[in-house]
Length: 296
Image 1: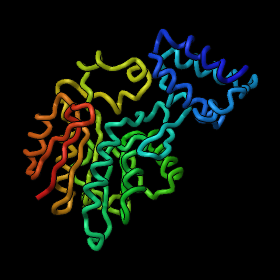
Image 2 (image 1 turned 90 degrees about the vertical axis):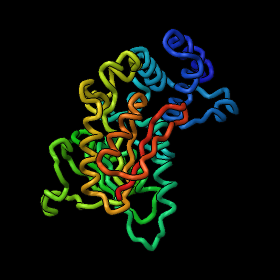
Image 3 (image 1 turned 120 degrees about the horizontal axis):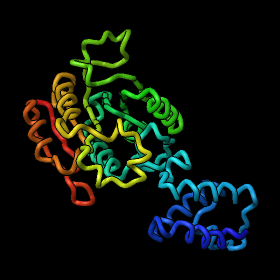
Image 4 (image 1 turned 180 degrees about the vertical axis):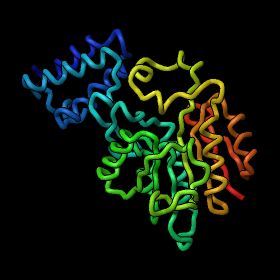
């Protein structure tokens, strides 16, 4: 079958579930993954043919898309900040809002004088490792650490560090059980006690907001990394701010990705720990999404 003809079939099979633009995006993502071809290649060579093996793979992907499985999980990878990352059901799929967080850190860190020495960064709740790895890749002279409660997620993060040729130290730990990083002897717990930057995109979606979540997220992405109890929606922010005020160097920086509905509350929480220059930053969609703060 000609690839250009299969595109019509692909569109027809998925048209009841997705809009045409999204299906078109799916088609070209899969085209590059399975055939190594880009949109322009198909346009210039309309006689490209798919064999029976490829047809089976395409049909299998269509079946997964019909049950709302995310294309990133189907293909086992995604792109984030220009880098390739493996993902599976143990890791959240990195999102554009998180790329904005990474971009802000990189721009701010570019102002640091190089003679100030290594930049020591801690990413809390690293998941696929997308934040830690992107920072390690794009900020010179860094020493990057990343922690997560999920061993399965850390296994993927370690692979992603290798894929992108960066050094990140990964540690399996539940931050809710930590009172101070200094309580862990360096021989047993490979984390330094002070950092220049602490960043986190912790669970922040309240159960009451589940109605807003698309089925492909709700049914497939790890709830451990997504949801927090309605009664204490800022649980992770409180714990991380508590750690950050103890374990950031003077003038160290704290960055959060936050729940868009809790911007004011998150700012007030961070300020209550004594941080200065606390800023609430909107994302490209105009939603409150990032909180930045500095330690005295």
